[in-house]
Image (tube, rainbow, N blue to C red; front, side, top):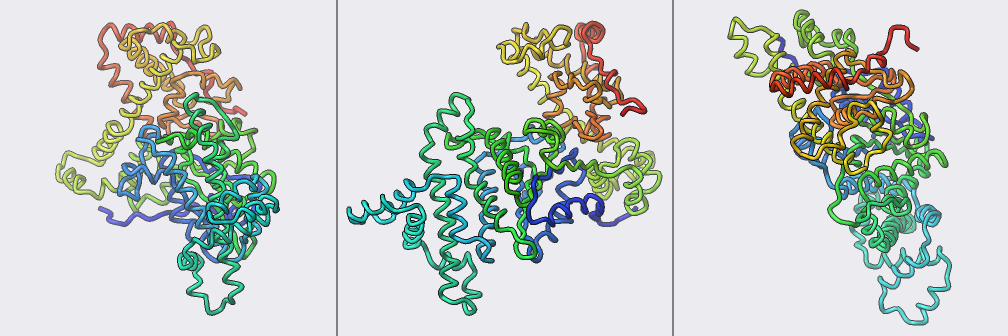
Length: 567
């Protein structure tokens, strides 16, 4: 048996594309790296790129919003889920926001240490978007409550720049000088800096703190409006932008300070889709989806208007493969890079003889496919004591190991995800009953049209199961290859089953070619197994209902199959 440690295999073409994007100090568009789960997107950044992107003038911030989900993150000795993050307990939006802001603040402090970001730059950038006079006066008075009445009157008559200098001075008076010097590392380079230079750097740090205090105070003034917005479920772009003011100010400062071969910051945000699922613990912020949209809108605007530091968003949510481009403006608003992992021949070149024999590979590529994470997990199983026990049984073969791995995926991944999809379908039925679903989605002839007539929860559950069975059967009939742009109607996205299975992460809507398919061949086999198991458990009455559904109202997406020679 081969006993060789697993190695991270380079992806030269994709790495070159990402490196070329990262080498620019400013770019007009953010880049989205998207693809199904298990193809190695996170590994590519962590193991192959980030080390080089933090050498010399380059500094790269890495934010993984999944880090706060302790049950499903490698940092907490767990693995990423195979299904969507929507099947896990969502993190709080406060934690996600703190992660992003902490990362950007540390990058900004690095820029201050290099002298690339100054107090005057912070003031001019903040003054461009915010009215500062009132808030600066309050900060000055708060820091010096004993100020004379005459001085109070004089403060109300000076310009914003003078108020800014006074506020920086007032904030410096109550700050810990040693803490500031530690941030700047002045103790290490103090001998080579004059008093004027050291005070210049300290002033920039205090200006950054003052900017944060200004934005925090202004957001506090909007607290009641944000709480009312959350209670009514409305939308306000100005209130959403107020919650993203601080990270976007830092992004603008870093972008303006970027300079080739001196200070080249960049940002990688992994699992960006988690922002949409993040939950609120109080009414101090807008909802997760609104915060997500505001952040991306402002990143896009910064790049389009003034150019922005390279920002790369990594995600396994197929929403970002196509739909996000339309929701945020037009098809080319982001730079799209799609990663599907290895082709079978490419995977064979790396795997055969080193990790698997030729006969074992023939079984793997047919049953599981070349998905890198499947291969890693199967190899880990092969190295385990369980495999040794199987080998001791002379009647057992490598196929038994593969079958055990498929059973593991079935029980731990696919079945729970399908249960979650059933809950989403029941929610669709309740929304249709209450009139929340547009009539266009309930048009005549659609298999899911009569969901609004269900009053009994048990009937609603049976309806959801029937719809899901019908949908999976229709996918099997199309050989799991539906071209959602086949007739330019997007009709398959009206189907609540499509939305549910995309939501739970078992299906992936890829960008080019425009196919909806399972995230891997192994998951595809598990979906078929799920259908067979559910049909075997059916009573005679439920079986007749299923047959009636298939014959009278059954789905058929065969006209969306990608034909040979299709253009």
